[in-house]
Structures are given as C-alpha cells and as structure tokens.
Length: 72
Image: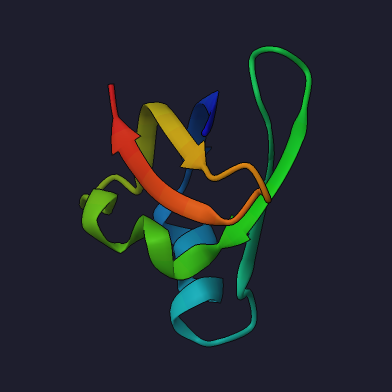
C-alpha cells in the first residue's frame, strides 16, 4: 500500500463543477511532490458548507488503485 498526504482546499463554487458532472477527477500534488489523480466521488463524505479544507491521507494499493481518502 502507498500513502499520499494531501492538503486540499476546494471552494463550494469549485465543488459545483463536480455536482454538475463537469468534473469527474481530482488532480492534486502530495506533500512529497507526487501528482495523484482520483475520482471526485471520493470527496463526498468530506464536503462541508465551506467546501473541502484540510489535510487528507490518500491510500492506494501497489497498483495505485484507490483504497481510501481519510481526513487527518
């Protein structure tokens, strides 16, 4: 398994692009400098009225398939 630490700051306006279906993938740079890509649907449980703000751990398997996105 691999872990990537991400600092995500997504405004409510940016999230509307996801809900409208315009955006299906999130691309982010981890603290270690690795660019990661994952399905935007994995953000659902982290959405608040102010968007998404915080530090998250993205966990993937050895083939880089999504396992979990957890708030830290």
